[in-house]
Length: 211
Image (cartoon, rainbow, N blue to C red; front, side, top):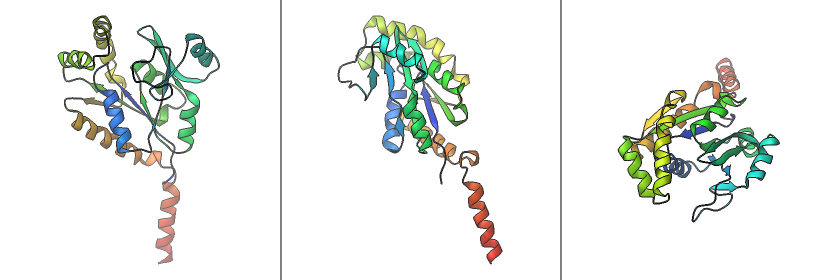
């Protein structure tokens, strides 16, 4: 049944598992469109332009913002991140759901935009702060200085959990994945997201009348 695409926002402090859960959700439902963000940070080893991020210079990024081409944008740890608007609007018109792996600032901007009624926002919490730090160090991607910065920022990030529609505590990634699937399945089935239901029920009533 035709419907507008959803904007599924996943947010968490760094290391709480949102990127892993986003990848699992995409594997479960290949029709999901992953929103590739633009960023001014340098690529990490193995990252490909247009896959993990659209890597931009600061002037290029600022030009996109000035032209109204960003759905949301923010500065994080000295680099700019943002969501190009065009691909998201195209997916919504096609009835495809878009998955966002973004921080609370980006999520807040999208929830306050004209697309707010199509948003489903989910915040991922770590089971403990010790576990959060352990995950960051286990990635072996960042220096001690960067990890310290991320840990210092995590308290502020966690304070925004109450702004989200749903909260998942990531004790176990398999359980968290199952909860995500349940949320998405339920949100897709909501009556107010399925404009074709009225016509469908009219058809059922016509069948009654024809009996």
